[in-house]
Length: 341
Ligand code: ASP
Image (cartoon, helix red, strand yellow):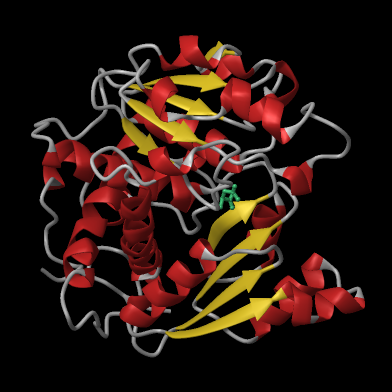
């Protein structure tokens, strides 16, 4: 199936550009439920392509995508690069460590420079919350947020939803939204953009979300976003269908947030014994990078029938292909999506 053909669940969203009317992908907070479902459905064709021997299309041939990463990344940078290349685009990576940012260039000047190079899409990771939005205001092409500070990491939440949907379907679930599911997210909720984006995404898809962290690592007032808040991990796990573990974001911590890694593991580490408290066959997720022996034990991370951590990585490439393809439809003049620039 090509990108412009009707996706499998077309009745769920409006036709043409009204299915996804945004120029940028800055956060899950900007998306309606049907727009999330649209991106997930669009990604399915790329999951299929990525499982073939020849994983290449020329859908974005002639387009230039710049991945501007001002913060470290393994999975996200690599998968955006692979996604762009599999779609046939020219992909360029800019690492802050070797860029003029180190010479004192402001974010705005960097944005103006990237814009002058006439990129067709810019993917940005930055340590400051809101930085991607700031850049989006200064450039003429779609901007994709690959993680901005503690704010949002929308493609992570989308790939998590896609991975979960695949795993639930494999287990025979007919529904492809998450109504009736209880998902426990445990870890450094305070500093985690993954927690925020996932809370918004999973709730939009119907799930009940429990957030669990020590009091010092739980944002004040997060209940207002509809989450159930726990400080006792065993209680948060009770009957959960999915357990998503998050890393301690030590790079964002100023001062001492936990007594020690050992103590943290004792109270909030996911061990095989503790997983028993969750629902029967509960699935285990982690966005990576994992700190084995701290927030998650190796035997849990590697459980073949329960852990879907490597599937999350697989789905990351497909969801990023979908986002790049959809956001460039306007400039490519895809029928129903506006004029070619
Ligand atoms: N890779 C995710 C992020 O960039 C999670 C993490 O770093 O802990 O936010």
